[in-house]
Image (cartoon, rainbow, N blue to C red):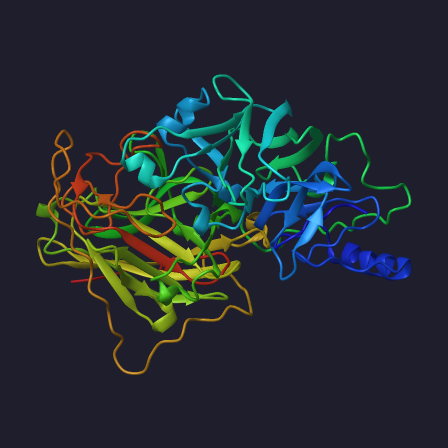
Length: 557
């Protein structure tokens, strides 16, 4: 049988699941406890989330390196040669320069286990436990086969703030060490595992204690370019499937014959923008950077929130749901591999408008709800938009503003969100534009098969609107921006405790809170970079699916 997976991600169709159940039943095999994953004869277990320990232990007087799978209700002991570790796309995160340089890398994004974002993502949590070896154990990286670099080190946020160097354990390339000593006292060690390239990495470990040694190879699949269910475990020399195994069922979604072709935006920068057009206001999407971008009508676009955005709800964010539950989180700051949505009024000047531009969320159709918030100076989330407690909700931006927010979706699926963008021009003319944007959240739906705009899903569920007048949360107001060449003031916000990593915000022009403009690292998108103190905004999109903006423009005098 092909490898089965642990956790939510399924790599085989329902037909294979049924065939596996029949096969196991006929063979009289019992499912293992632990993570809940089962291993058919000749197959491998794919571990893609939960705690596990690499444990050197005495077995019949000899030292053996085994894996204690601690991800379920009951621990399960597994052989490394039977396991494929999957480091999913959500593990991709920024690598601090000291950590990258310690492994001979330039500062970049890498896939990390037990990294600074570990508490927020669903990935394996590997540790080392030396309590059963009978003494200290020498752990050596005696072999490595993979596309680039593997490393193991400890580098916490507190160490970074104190300007301390990483504590190095192992690495596949100079100047990293090839061995470390595992304490036999029993204290679990959980350093960060780092991979700089997607693909299959095979890590060969030799453990030595009390005159006895064991060498084992662990197969690790990084990213989503390779299906871990099709990867041979161990050193790859032992097949995991026999010719008599039932074939994997394949289900391919077909595009709707009536669905217009959509431009799918799955990663990189995109702004939802208010634009002046001949005395009117037009709501459009701006994809790209300030110097290199394209404009699209919302009814032409499907936004794809990839599985890499899946995160755990942190403590203090009860409006998103139960802490620890999964949501799909597009953070305030740009993360590689996922879409980075923002707001933009930079084509208006203060002289053009009488007041601010309003972005009102009128309705949400889909399996869940949508919200948007920022964190105040104390790190407390302040909700601006939340379809879970009724709509409409609105937030406003000043002219000449470019800002970003954290967006969160509570489930996978297709969403359609309708926004009305409105303003009063300097001569008193009131202008507005209403659009619907389609979003596909997760990988259960192929975004290329989803119609943009209003769509035609018969099961789409509008967000409930409370009786009486809808309450509109107060809009976050940012501190005045400083010049691009100036330094941030001492009143800059504290680090965001949520999955977006480092907190804080900046905007271009004079705008509302929540705006960020990137300087260095990933793309800078503002026409003028300014730092806004005291604000970080998160838009929480609850539910899964595709959100689409459809235009119903109206202009009144």
